[in-house]
Image (cartoon, rainbow, N blue to C red; front, side, top):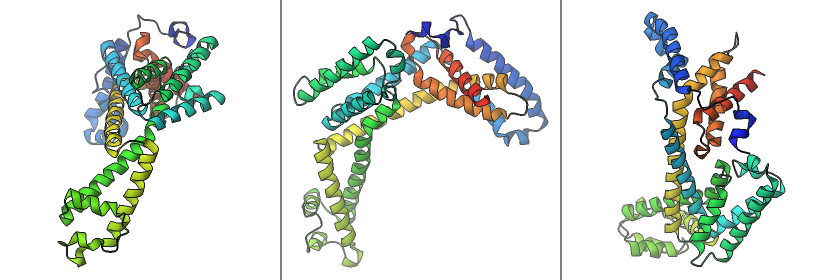
Length: 345
């Protein structure tokens, strides 16, 4: 079902000018709060809600072009994450198991943002599910061959028919990111050991190959006074990192350098996604204030409704699809209103 036919969106027409409404709301707030600001500037600086209002209205509204740019940037970085994780056999198998488990438990909506809407056409959903499973199996069979990249692109295209949830991206990336953090620790340990004890690359490799078992490991630290040498700690660290490297190689089947590089790319992509989502949040906070005011009953703290509105705004960001032609404020208004009215009920 398209958004045009969805009853949730029938209240909003294309000719509604949200920018104009929000600018009027901004003027109202500045008029009402402006007089109080003149009375006691010191108190205002201590009032969190007023500081919040001033911060909110310092952010410019987004144009439709801005929203498209943000949507495209988020999508590009989500695809970068998927492409990186699906290049690992272990993560490909994990994705397949997640897919099967979600299908059996009827929880595919946890993996794909638009699955509930998509599944209203049961035949289409069934065909899509079979196609994605078939292509994953093909990818598994051809993993070490030249067709891999094309098959990964095909799987990503199929995923984007229903769009991945943050949960799916996090689940597929988590092992790589955990290993990436540990590899960073190993590199720091190596750098410190070489620097503190004047070890060259060859000597470090020799020490590391002993895995902390050699009784005469001290001979590799001739330039270091024995009282400054914590040999037991060095042995312990070497054993721990050796175990980690073996487990990591067994799990991923790839060298540390590649896993580290993947971790860098995935972290960068997640940062870009977060940055662009924050831009959407900041530009639409005034919409929360506008709706919170309209729904604010007597005796209810406005800050409570704003907090609920924030929850709705975050849900709107997850659901927003720039390709469907609706402005983000359409999504945001519905989700913010839903969150506030549910809280009041």
